[in-house]
Each structure stands twice: as C-alpha cells, then as structure tokens.
Image (tube, rainbow, N blue to C red; front, top):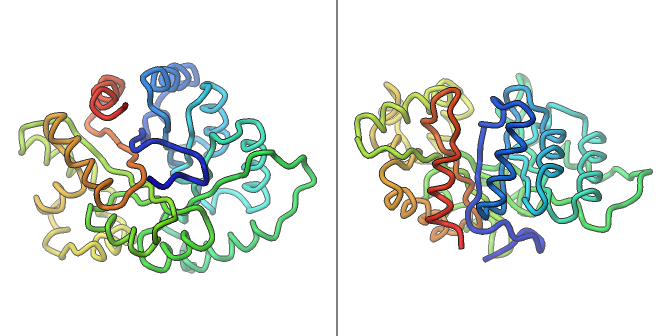
Length: 291
C-alpha cells in the first residue's frame, strides 16, 4: 500500500458530515470513541458552517493518534497565505497527523476550477513563513475527478481525494496518478437490506448532487446517461454511488475500491436520522474492517 509521505491512514477511515450537527463536547466524545475503536483517520468537509482548519485543529486536540483529513478545505474560503499559515501550525502542533485536502467545491461564476486551483497552488508554493518551521512536513492532497485535475494532484501534491465516484473511476484514477501518488476515495454506505427502502434513502441523499451542474458533469464523465440521472437516479446509478445491504455486502463492495487501486476509503454512513448518531454503524464497520 502507498502511504501519504510516510503517514499511514490505514485502508479505511470515517468520512462524515455528522460533526456539523454536534456541539463541541459531542464532537470530542465521538472522535475519542472512534480513536478508541481503532479508526486511524477521520475526514471532514467544509460546508455547513464549521471552518475547515479550526475544525481540524479541534479534532486533533481532542485525540492523541487520530489522523484528520480536510475533505476538503475550500480554496474560496480563505486566501492562500492563511491556509499556508494554518497548515504549518497544525503540522507543527500535531506532527504527522494532519492532511490538508484542498478543493474548489463546485467553483464560482466566471472561474474555471482547474485554473483557480493552479493559481492557488502557485500562491501557496511562493509563500515563505516568518513563523517557526515545523519539524514534520505539511501534507496536502487535492480533490480531483477529471484527468487534468488528477494529473495536477499527482504533480503538485501528495495525491488525490475523490468523492461520490464509482469503482471504475478509482481504477482510472490510479492509472492517471501512477504508482506513487496517494488515492483516497470517499464512498457512501447504508445498512439497509430492503432494496426499495435503501434506494429511496440513497436517492434522497443524492438529490442535492443531481441538482448541481458541476456534479452532473462529473456523473456524465463517470459514464452515466441522462436517463441514469433523471427522476432521482436509475437503480444502476444509485447502487454504484451508495453501497447498501447487510454489513458483509457493504464491506465487500468497499473493498472493491481498494482492489481497484485506492490506498484509503473514507466511509460516509448515510440514513442516520436527525438527532441520532452514526456511532453504532461505525462500530459495526470497525469490527469488520479494522485490524
């Protein structure tokens, strides 16, 4: 297995929006239990109000060994100099535990995602810090889907983070990234054995992405037709993007990404009702996937 420049996240980790809905004490308790269960990595997005780098810092401070990955910190949220300074401080305070995942998150009107990312990386790489340099390096990866962004992730970072993709895309990504770059793949899972119920929950989860031109373009690149993307998504589309079933079936499907070339799979549990915790599902996954 390729590691992340000497940093081993394990083959599977937790990818979650859940911390957006918890107070600080709840986030701390959940992170500490995940660490006690043996999970080595937790991935956090930047979407609903939690600022990416303070969020990462809080999780790092709440745990002792857990790796925290921004999946992703949006380049539109802060200027490159402040991302650079925050990343260096986290690398210094928590050596070999933080990964700065950067992404365009849909882009902005009048901008092209690839050009915006190149410009942002150029700014980052030109910066020098007046602060003490950390002993451990600041590590970064890029959110990437298309060939050009995957090549950029390979050439200008430690590797790529993909989100809501199928196993075929993981295989294609590995071919583009080559043998040495890191590939972390997010995938949604649902513990539900009834097909109609599972697909209804999955369609609700995917509905927001099917309303986004950026994501629709991505899904078309994955090989899905207009018919696949209509009316909440075809069964084929839904089943590829959300792995559902009993724990054994879900785990078998997750391992497909590893077999296709992923170094790490960040598992997003969906179908958790508001006010409830995904922890019972994370425990089940831990029993099945962790050494």
